Length: 246
Ligand code: FES
Image (cartoon, rainbow, N blue to C red; front, side, top):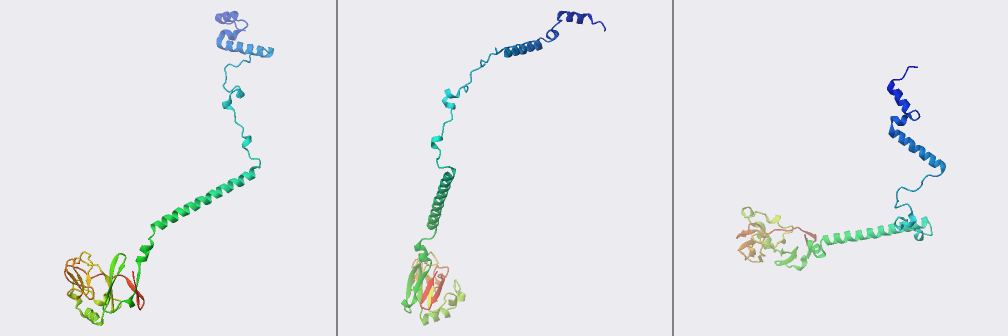
């Protein structure tokens, strides 16, 4: 065996029994503590005193950490009975909600739809048998006056013989009537909206006193500021003696 260097020899002589303690003091200290613990545990003298006071160490002394008991509120009948009740409640609430929604939508639609008087005015039926030949009748339709003239044979001939091509608003009489004896048109002057007077004017038809417009027996503008003929509304004859306007 080769001889050790002089420095190593001196170290070994200084620490003959605990060489590691001398080389690493921290390791030596931990080794000592571990050993002391082992000795204390084996001898039953280990100190079990806790190192800090835990707020949860004793739950019985701290009511805020206690879980309350719901045993008094639990059903005595079992889970099936509870589910039946829950289904019944959910179904009942669903039915009530559906009924409320239906009523709301229905009220909204009823409010938004046309009222009964408006619907009644959309079409007007007139009994023509009550209008004698050569007479005018004025009815109200959608808030406007409508002239119905039961024309005589002479009036029909005069309306048809008129040279309509050179009129201000050229239109033959045949385009303005469905039956020659019945002239039906809106009673609104085409100038500024006055209601003309029947059986008057220079052409034996209607005269508007507001600004002096004259219409002939076919309702065509013949004189004055009116630019157009009196308008003809939609109408039909469902029976011989009846007319429906609108
Ligand atoms: S409103 Fe009829 S002529 Fe002016």
